[in-house]
Image 1 (cartoon, helix red, strand yellow):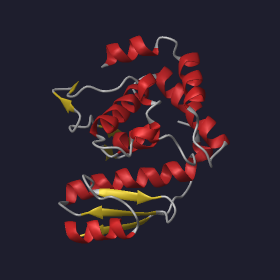
Image 2 (cartoon, rainbow, N blue to C red):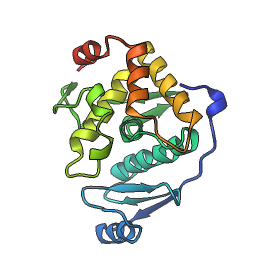
Image 3 (tube, rainbow, N blue to C red):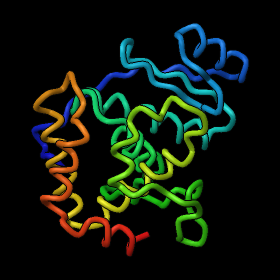
Amino acid sequence: IIGVHALKKVKLNLTVLPTRRAYEAAIKQRGGDPTNTAGMYFHASNSAFIHYDNAHSAMRTSVHEAVHAINKAVLGYTPRWLNEGFAEYFELTKNNMQTAVVEPNRSWTTNSSIAKSVFTINWLIGLEDTWQKGDNSKLYASSWAAIYFLMDTQAGRALLKNIMLAEQQSPCSKLSEQKLKKILYTQLPDLKREYSQWL
């Protein structure tokens, strides 16, 4: 999206743990809360821990956590909706030769439709401080849907490119809600209507 020049080799210390107990202990030892998680990425140590339940879910979770490492290396610190949205989006990438197909996330869809209510993009980008409180499933679903919507069109990908380039300019801080809204509505003035129709 932002060009070949932005590609970087990213190393990630990834540990797959065979039991839930071992996984939870590793997360708690690093100050995290393992509740309702199968994997967790720690920015400071560039490490991720995965609970191995089965091969498919472990690989999917590993890709999700690796996307966080890639985001940090390429973009710096990003708003949570963008970081989690990309991770949710790319965790279901299937490669076939030189092409990749991103499948809809079955956790959030039923019969190719969004299975639960999601926040509008405008609302979602203002919820940065609510991620640490309670059940985040609607935030994850909303972040995934926002990225899937933007990746689905040329105009959406151009908008994501501008957001990512703006993030790169100041990698040690996240774009503010005001800057994000300015980028969103300058490029896609009909964003609310188009997103509503897409949903």
